[in-house]
Each structure stands twice: as C-alpha cells, then as structure tokens.
Length: 506
Image (cartoon, rainbow, N blue to C red; front, side, top):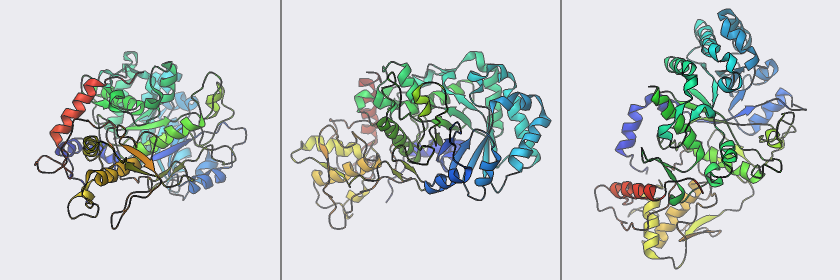
C-alpha cells in the first residue's frame, strides 16, 4: 500500500505541469567523447551501450557512422552542433537547414534523435559567438518546424554553471548580468519551444576550487547528518548535496528573470577516477561513490528542495576515458570504461532504474542495535517513517510486519528499508548510533525485508537525522501519516534542524 501523498505535493505538481512532464520520463544517460587514441568502432560502442542497458546518449558531433550504428536500437540520441560550426549556422538560416537535412533528417527516425545541442558552454568558452547563439538555436528549430519535427526533437545549448553567481544560498543566485542580453532571449526561446535548459554541473570542481572548504561528503551526495545540512535562510530549504544546490540556484536565477516553468536537464556531471599529486580526491572510490549516489538520486525522482519530486534527467560525463585530452591527469579520467570496454569501476545503469554499485557485495541489512535506548529508537523510527520517506504501512495492525509489536522490530524494518533506499551507502545505517549493518536477514514469516538496491520508484526527499525529541509512534492524531508521523512535528523538526545546522562547510 502506497503512503498517502501530502496535499502540498499535489499542489506543487498541479502548478508545475511542464516540469512534471520531464520527470515522468526521468533518465540517466552518458556523454560519449571521442578524444581517444584508440576510439572503439561505432558498432563496439553500441554493443557496450546495449550490454549496459544505457538508453540515452549525448554525442558531441553528428558522426555518420555512429548515427548509423545507433539506428534501430531505440537508444535516444542527443546530437550536437560543434562550437566550430556555430558561427556559420548562427549567421545563415539556409546553413542551419542544410545542417539539419544532412545530420538529422538523413538518420531520423531509424536513429532515435530526440534533441540537438547547439554548441557547448558557448558563453564561457566562445564569448565572441555569444551574440549569434540564440539565432543558431532559432535557425535549427525553424528547420525542424519545416519538417514537422519540432515536437519530437528539442533544441537547447549547454551552459556552464559558472555563469550563476552566488549559488549559495540558492534563493539569491543570479546569472552573470553581463550575459543578460543573451540569457534572456535564450530563456525566452526555450520557454516558447517547450525545451529545457541544459546545465553542466561539476561538484568536483566546486569542491576543488573551495580548497576543501566544501565538505567532500556534500560534493559526493553522501548522506549527511542534520547538523551538516545547509539551510537557505530565505526559504528554509535544507540542502544536503552540491548537485541539488547548483540545480536550484539555476531555477532561482531563471525565476529572477521571470522564467519559472523551464525544466533543467543536467548535460554533464561526473567525477574523475584518477588525478595528479595535486588532485588527491580524484580517486576510483570517489568516482564510484559520486556516480552511484547520483544515479540513485536521479532515478528515485527525489527532485531538489525547491522542486521535490521533479526529477532532473542527467547525462554522466562520460562513457570512455579520453586519453588524448589536454590538461591535468584528471581530465583524461572521467570515463566509466576504457577504450577496450573494460569498466574503470563497477557501475551499471539500467532503464528499469536499478543501480548496482557493487556486484560482488554480500547481502547486508540494517537492524536496530540490541540494548539501544528505547526513546532514541522510537524517535529514529518516527523520522524514518516521516521525513525519511519510508513506507511503513507494512507495520500497521493486520499487516505482515506488525508482529512482533515492539519498537525494536518495527525500527529494524524501517531502518533496513531506508538503508536499501539509499543503496546501502556509508552512513545510511546509523540513526544516531541505534542501528548497525548486519549480514543476518531479519525477515520472518510473511514479513519480507528489502535485500536489494532500490528501484526507480524509491524515494528520499531530504536527508536529515531524526530529532531525538520525537516520541509519537501511534496514528491516533488525524494529522499523522500511515505510521503516525505528525506533519506539524515534521515541520517543526526540520525548521529546528535547519536553524541549528545551517552550513555545509567544515
């Protein structure tokens, strides 16, 4: 039985229909760069995509052989106008039409092209072309309209998150005002064509540039205790990771320019698996942790604090390590695979939403500790069944996990469900010291405990610790949810937690 949906959530959804549409088909895809000394043949690339069940890709060009190899696979493809072709297309409607004819119409619909990326980070890497960027988008779109494909294929351009000033608190964020002459018409185009804002989000760089002032766990999307969450003092929204902070900063920056219904697609994000001596946090473990947590966060449709439940589809950077890239060692090591198709670390993306961070891990569970303080257990149980978004309906009287009717057994069920919803990441089985990981399956009778990673429908809105002052455990109050978590108590707890722990910084 599903937990009842809060009225505030229903109101939010009904007022943001355009954002909901993209959340209903949320995905995690990959970028495919080709700056390799031994780039695999397109058929090998597609074979790898199929084997990994990767169903959304972004190409940085329109390589004909790659588009042919992708034909009849069902894989959704975003193609790109390279920056070096931007000036010609932005200055000539006919050049744009020829580009669409040659690179899109020649392959569609056999190749499932769903979007066109016009340039990449043009405003920051090619400022001289900024003045013709919007024209280029319009000309490409006009060519699609002429072929009656403007509803099937969307047009946008990736922006660097660096153009957002003062990203924390997100509610005070704004776009670099020197770019307003381009940003405003760009947003107008995206809104009028029902397209999306493409944003490149790199918490790794934010973390490195902060000289570790930003917590590593915050950058890696690891679960944070309530006193480490960041609270926007203007909105009282609580932030537990840099990814959400940056995305919400973009939402607020658009709203400042009176654009409130443009969805965001994260066109690039990731973490390098190797770096030089001055890049100590570019490691296999951190790359695996970031991408595993990212995939889980996106596919759970958690959304962001500003738009909970409105998921942000995301492309991971990138499929292959690009050994020909210039720059630091980390620049060559963002890939999930090497040129031979060997995984850099164990990570799988599937269209069904399953995320397997480690294929060889033995089954583990999260259980309440023997001898744990009963009041602390009760408070943690209340939190798990409330803000923790665990469906505790199985613990109600008459349901399979009601017996034994004691706080130890009920807490173990809730703790274990939360632990698996979080993908068993470090820190998700603690609950202020009253829970611990075990290899003993706590299932009993007809009460089956979750023992595998969460699927697409898993949900976790905000990661905070349970208030140790909470004592309610019954559903006697009419404002309580399915397992007695009172809405008012939740609101007060989150506000107090926010006021006490209002910084993400060390």
